[in-house]
Length: 215
Ligand code: DX5
Ligand code: ZN
Image (spheres, helix red, strand yellow):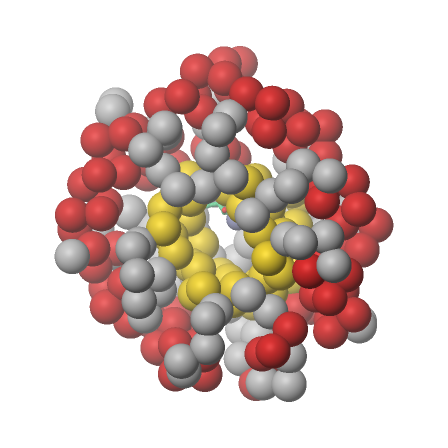
């Protein structure tokens, strides 16, 4: 399955010193950018301007997670940042296949995120159009929530749906040293962690501990 990818979410960072916070996670693989619009999720975070700032101050590739009602509106401006991934929510896309291909046309990997209750079945006809499946392991909108245990089954089902395709399986929400071994065992190869990483006294050490615990 290749090397485990770790993507700390800056939602849990201290925004009064964002530059220094990003330096604390230098040994991660990506920086996870949670954009929330207050419609798709019951919370607002930040928009493309903050993503632009992160891009300027950080060497790690961006992993952009769009929790917005109208993702198509933001894809062009975000693609300019040359992120590694742009992930949209299944429930927010009326023309999902079109949206995924519009992301790929910018040379960016296209991801689809599923809320905890959203079935995987809806992805079976777009498996050739996506590069990443994001299984939400909490209901999106807030950092620091509790992992939903039923999602282990969903991660396993997603892994078998993926089969031998070159598709990343990302998990997001409530991931820490307490459950990383189980989510990786279930089939995840890309881990988002917000409060666990940024809340640790030594964030870089926490990231390497996550890698060790996953093995
Ligand atoms: C939730 C966001 C997550 C969140 C994860 O809506 O998509 O990325 O920041 O935070 P933790 O790891 O604290 O659950
Ligand atoms: Zn996220």
